[in-house]
Length: 389
Length: 186
Image (cartoon, rainbow over all chains, first blue to last red; front, side, top):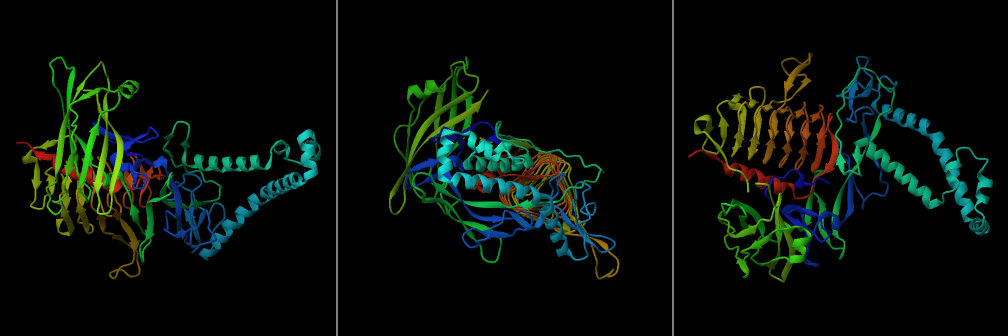
């Protein structure tokens, strides 16, 4: 998932989740039953539906039993990964072309005056190419399963591992599968499928960076088949601890759009912080003053208080000490919802700089929301990055 | 803290509905252009309203050297029922959209709360959904459909990631603050 922290400009205010990761205030979620604000990694996803990014066809998981992984009517260019579009020849034969590179299905011979026949031709071509390999793999898988299910041989296997070797030596293409059990084979297939998906989009998990493709179209025609377009998914979010829903989707009537029926963002239940003025106090430039503005962007009145962090945490993360944190509780009454005038309060934090190249300080907040039924409370830590001045 | 951008009043036109257009921009066919209000058009922006209708929402920010041009198809018309002729399609840009510098846009529809990066080329008949991001230096081939809540990038542009649920809030705040901080020199 995309993270706005990468684009955001300094000075920044980020909220630290319990897991240690930092996100913008708008990107955090909150679970009111746990009274905790959490990041996307501390929530679990539940797939609500699959949809095609080109034609918009939707398959809701609860309604349909036969779910497919690929769209039945959309294809991807095997050369540049662009979505293909329909084309009609001068001879009135239908086919697919890529509008970016010079790939057409005419070079493969997949054209037909009846457009539905084009789909069947592509599907048949796939079956012929992969049928033989798929059969071999299935046969080996079934043989290994039958051997492992046999109890007598399992006991022997535990004592003498070479028994399996002797039985499977006569098979072709089975040397790699001799030493693996059923669970290992499942793992290998999953990894293989992952690698295919990752290679398609040039994602490198180790560096956690995305390499964008820069493809130069050439006039050489390719003989590859068009790839069926993979479906994307829309998800609901749940808290991992209490399993309550944080975000739920609802399809809109007579449209392919979805709206959120339940949404709990940290932004809706906590004061919104913004960095105001940043300036040096001394001529020697050892003290810095930062003005922070707080807004109440929720629909309810709010009470909150600040607590300074322990010295251990300050030393561990090399944070600067803060002076002038407001100690008494503030109350934010949101009676002026109708008018455009936003109520806000500000406090000035004075920092003592100790040979720091990057200026960063932190404090913790507890906010009490005065909702009609209960008082809900959120506790969270705030990190402020100012950068170098 | 967003930086305050000051401009010379002599270099910008300002309308009663809050639209700020640079005098160095080229805007044609103003009769067919419909803007809601509170938009900013920087220097060297080309907006072709003479080809087809252009409807623009509020809080649009168009940076330098951007061309906004309606897209076209080949089709039959009443005037020429037998021969195919170029037909220009209307361009629709929704609210809270930001278009960075040096990009060329020939899409049919751009949804709400989207951001388009620098040096992008968005080809004919593209449809960009709401809350989506198009990264810098990307090329969208003709007829591409960018679904809602997605990130596209590369050459040709390909689906990369999903945007978080709060992109609408982030984008609205960013553009409202940008408009507030875009002030004339006193």
